Image 1 (cartoon, rainbow, N blue to C red):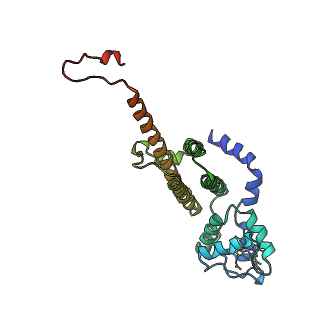
Image 2: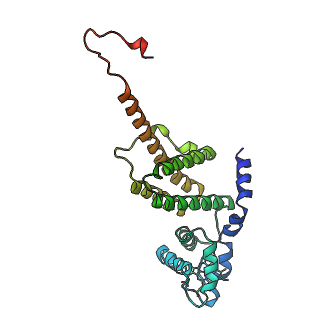
Image 3: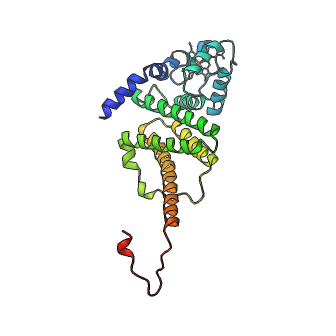
Length: 240
Ligand code: HEC
């Protein structure tokens, strides 16, 4: 079953998968650990901080850079987003050798990064009216995630999920989703990314619990008042 789903998704996403496959291409100019001056022109990326790398990528995204910027503008535009790309590149610079995660993992990660990035944008743009729809979308995403990820199933404990003490505001939801996105950006193995997914499920879970409580409170409020004091008629058999 899992195999079929992967293949179906794969066919659907062929174009992005080919474009974003991995960083194999970069090493021919930058070196295996980004330790070279690419084409004699670039800075040596190894030794740059993740922040500096992101700034360089954002520069290319905005059309700025050195004499050979056109080349890198093309590369950056193939990437997922500069947060994830900078995290990937930085990780390469501190991991010796050409030891990349599997294509399957990279594909899954890129898919998550894209989805979370889009979700973040939608939350930012959402108003009071569209927020409930987004909340359902988050829950649906979490459900799909859970259904297809066996490792995640092992790690998630629904019973431990609690309703929030205060109502989750739009900015609180955005912060949680951003946190999950940062977590995914910085995951380079299945065991790492699953932790981010657990956090995402916890968010969806707490949203669901909130709702559950609201529904319970509502249904309680609608019950006719029943006298239960001394001399009260036993109504239990009518209340089933
Ligand atoms: C054909 C050679 C080539 C390839 C392939 C290439 N780069 Fe570059 N890269 C360059 C050059 C040249 C520069 C400097 C461009 C300029 O003038 O701004 C550069 C600059 C950079 C910089 C900024 C460093 C600086 O000088 O400020 C980063 C980060 C970077 N590349 C990452 C990557 C990544 C990641 C990939 C693969 C997805 C990649 N590059 C693929 C040649 C290449």
